Image (cartoon, rainbow, N blue to C red; front, side, top):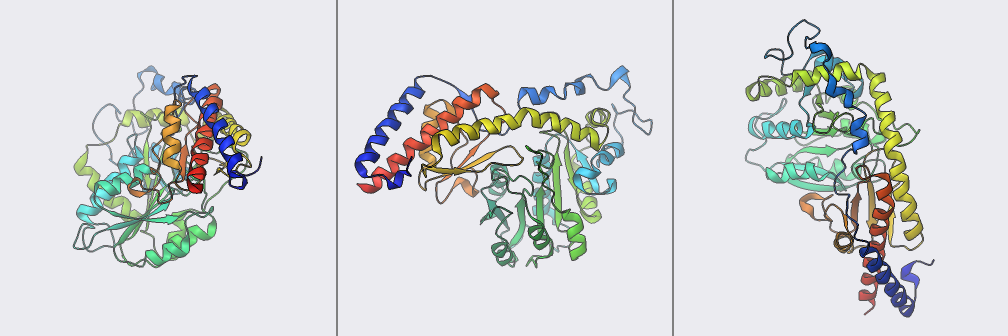
Length: 428
């Protein structure tokens, strides 16, 4: 069909009546589907149920012979666990920290410690006389933004381009001494699906920052989460920074939360030796040590990088059809209407949808009425404010495959109704 904006007003009114009728018919089906968060499905979690049987035969002794049930060892994590993730994190074992299940907790602690004590290369805590600020690529991850908002860190949005953030704008803004950090999800970004190209990574590592203690918060949460056979490799940011003379710039984060168990995985950190020493020193005041039994379970279950890859191939077989199902329904209902555009990600956990400006909040409200729960409009922007009110984040992973066609239909019908309402209001 023709794009809605090209329809005559009488034809647009007729189309709106049909949209409203279709929406009401859908709502009467009384479905209830939650697509708010990017959680693993039960089938994905089942892939790692062998963890629940480990350690087998009550063999809870570590490689050095010590008892994993007891105190002792380093807050940096088991040596064998750190070795397991060297390839994933792009760092040697002595520059890796393996913590408890949430990488978000490690990011939170890094910000809290930086605010209170400062970081290597700085001469004062971030919470000094000047207010700290972070650069925030948008659309982005709401939980990143929530940490900054919680601690009064100013957030400065930077648009994504398809191959990473707008680097001309990043380089202009980072010249300010108040800009202390930048959030980055460099591979299959949440929610846009962008993977940073080589030029972007090199510019981020080499750019001149106004603050000598500036940090990249490099959240490589989706490093292994591909949806197709296409490889999406990114440069090793630690190596790039080392070559650029900014070796302390990057804090690299990862986790097994979407690899093994979301509620029982491992949080990961890697960086320069100075940064790792800084964080472990702070962690010693906070905890006697991590959950060594859980780290032992992961080492024995995953075994090596090949074991990680095999497991993630199983995940791909489960979730890739879900992304295709959403795309097929959006194509059937929205293609050619001019009401929305959406990405077809090669990996990650989300589909990012842009609707007509001024319509996202209305779409979310209508979808909720239809029984499809979405994250609030604006959640992918700092302070929950999307200045164009257009971005939606769709999370296909957790629902069952059979639920995704009706869920996507509910979203598509909500988009069509919201946009026709908006177009008609503009013509009155």
